[in-house]
Length: 100
Image (cartoon, rainbow, N blue to C red; front, side, top):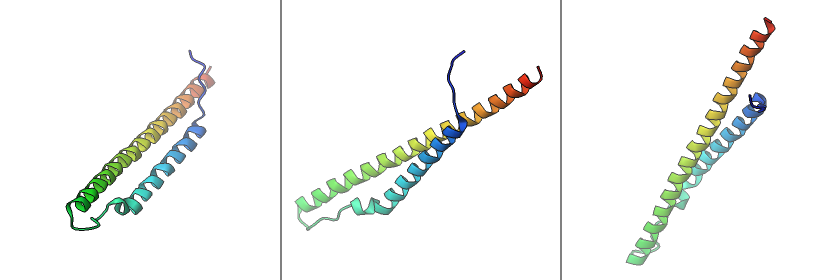
């Protein structure tokens, strides 16, 4: 048997913080994503190429941030599920011990 102690209340606080971080990142991406896309400064080939390059980088950044938000939510869900499992198991064990 291991000596690991887990406090479900602390896990729930961590879950809440992770969900808040994910929500804030999502709001920031939505609010500022279009600001990262650039129109060409002129009609010449260099201006168009620079704008395409910068916009492509912005779109790649946006996609990676979106994946990061999803990953953060996945971690929060795993912690939430783990906390629920721990609480349920603790209650079952307590119920079994009270019958002794």
